[in-house]
Image 1 (cartoon, rainbow, N blue to C red):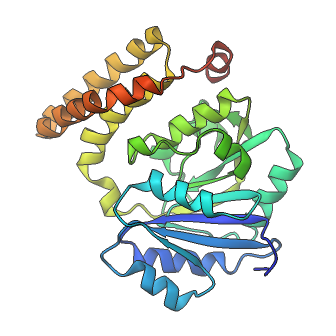
Image 2 (image 1 turned 90 degrees about the vertical axis):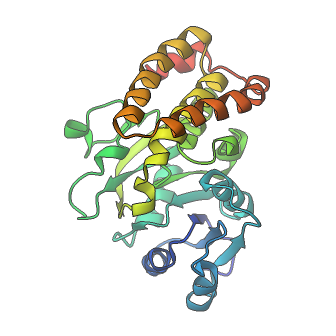
Image 3 (image 1 turned 135 degrees about the horizontal axis):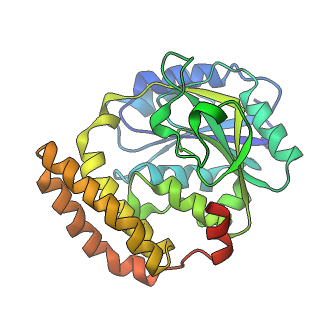
Length: 293
């Protein structure tokens, strides 16, 4: 890392993943070819994550949330504190085997001025197969995992972007807490005319954490945030068409897994937060929808 103003700021939201964060930082400080800083935003971890990071990597900028706010809050706080022109965001449960990842991400953004964001290639824990559950891109995984193309989605697991573009788009919607926050930010970036490029030459390896697989994410946050994103971003006809099949599926999932209380809790939470979403409502333009479709 250079003592001068860095070109790249790496932002890592962390909650209760001390060992994973330390492994990720070891990978990052083997990066070459670009000046960078690393910002870890700890979301009230009970496992001593920030103290362990400070002891092992004193060059890391550590931000400690006063209360648990979720990944959206942590990412926004890191982006706000960043000094770099470019942001690289990675979750705390990834590893970075490519020592040129940061340099290549910066070079791609410089050589493609139309690109506001880059979506990284996400490998599963074996480092060879694709992370299929996080492939929400418009083209098939089987035929396009190794191809570059414009997309309307990125995963917070691994991405890069121009700090200016992220700030102008409003950064992550903190009202969502977790899940679908990347979807809404991607929508806002596209609605401002930005381009998101899927870049298979920017790989990270995702080691799915057991906490991330808990059912409440699927049964509570998923339907609730689908409703909240639709209220904020979708024209009304599209909102109803989008929500009807998804809520029906989520209800069936909750019935099959005995989680009806969480599902109806999601509806209640969406109702409570709906007024704020309607006040902030800014449906995407028809041109943006044509690009997404």
